[in-house]
Length: 91
Image 1 (cartoon, rainbow, N blue to C red):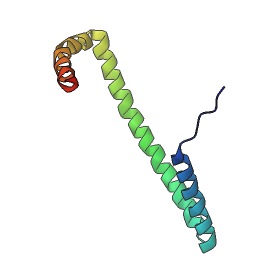
Image 2 (cartoon, rainbow, N blue to C red):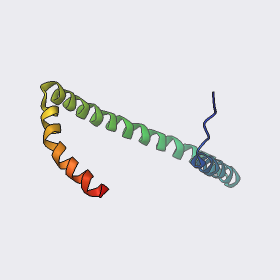
Image 3 (spheres, rainbow, N blue to C red):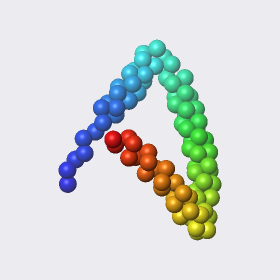
Image 4 (cartoon, helix red, strand yellow):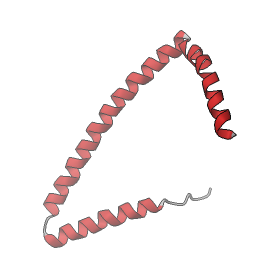
């Protein structure tokens, strides 16, 4: 099993988190940092829950469209347009 190389972005995030923690400890503002971390985590969870609701709604609508057979009609109607677009861009 080969180990997947980590992204350089992971190192950047790690540096920013460690640097912010060190600066907050040096300045004596760890309480504010901790509060900001938890506030941001709460905002992220609320955003994720809202997005999951919208995603579930649209997945449900698309499933109804698929079961009703409308997806095939949409695909047949859209295929000529996509074919022309692809042939123009590859020329």
